[in-house]
Length: 577
Image (cartoon, rainbow, N blue to C red; front, side, top):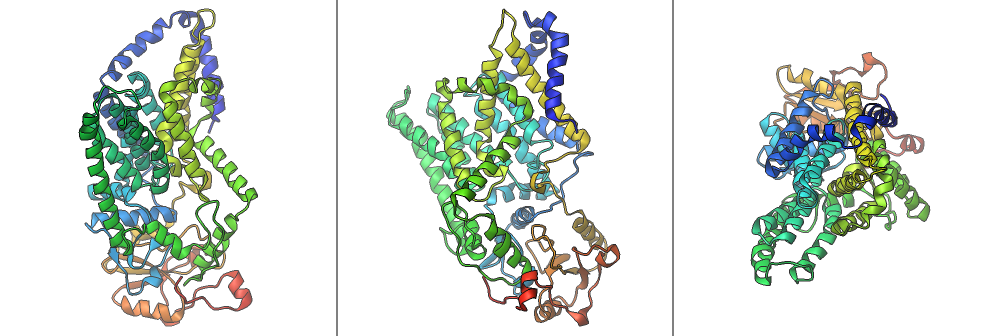
């Protein structure tokens, strides 16, 4: 794979060689090529739908390089459980009597069995599942994100630049990114953020109930995809909206129109949103005010979620993998200190900088100061600053945590391009040349990643458990039902879990269970006596030993202990967390 910096230099050289002398004085040739595109972007609704279907078409075209994703990490399996639950027409699932054997990361088992995550991503995956495969929902959500960002920016900047913003979004997030090549999510929350800011921009121009409903929809998506980050993201919007409602922002709409056309419809949306979330929480956790994510954190984590929180006493679990993850890695990841807070903040800035900005966009850095002189986008700058604070105060972090801010980041990126585009030196539009270099470089770098089949490699976000999927395909082709007992070794990497199942455990053709102590194993085998039982040892290096084999029922061996437990001679804990 060629570094993107090289593409930037090559783009500068090529465009300079073929373009400076004949093109720069008037840009007449480029204008002739670009004018049909500009006219097309002025048909705003049509342009939004064209980009929506173009994103789908392009991603389907690169399926030979980036095949339908196979899940690999616990977050993905948890979202797929949500998908399967909704696809069955259920909000949640009953706790299985032998749930301890199926216990796994990012899953709540009591009082009901379901994912710890908010429902929005699972809803899109369920749409895809009903259409044939959950990944179709990922594809649709990415296309919706790009289209929503174009729609949003059409009210903030000229239409041609809004369309360019959508294209840049697609290049960065909808071809080779883990947002499109996994089930982690990101696009759903980004869509919600774009709908919020696009609706506010339209309401500011004219009070209309349609804009109010879209604003309510955007808030609902954020509340059910990234609740905390979405809430922080909406703080500047709420202040701006209230300022507009009381007439402090210049408007031609009367107070009555603002109230009837905007405030009351939005209030109705918020009441519906609150009612749904309370009912959903009550069905999953038994408490209308307790989010499933908060319940999971309280149940399993002694480490905390925010930088200002310290450690709670260690908890105890039913299996060695949870002991290693929650009492080992999670507790060691962050301690309440300025040094650790500074380390995590630095890591997040580096991660977000590398993920949201390509090397080609370094050419835009000199134009950044001009952003602070743009009155129209000061509100967006404020949203970016406040939203980033909401991400930085969290202990944990991935790029999709900041998904609501994507529309703002892309807006500011395109706005710097607009400033650069106006720069002339001795009548030659060098700034316009540099803008085209950035765009061409993004296209070239994306094509290179496709040809090289390179997905995001940071933290193995595109890691796939191909072996597990192949075993599932093999068992699906065999008659009857199957139960795979997973035996982990002491050196198991607990970030990569095998024990995940769908919504309807008893009816599933294939079940994956954790091998525990002999008594629990015997209860499990007796309950599923009508199934063919298999043994899988994913940590085994020897391929002959590692391969799937019939389970030795008469020798239900206890699970291997962690190294700490083995050294102390302690048995596995049997106390519920």
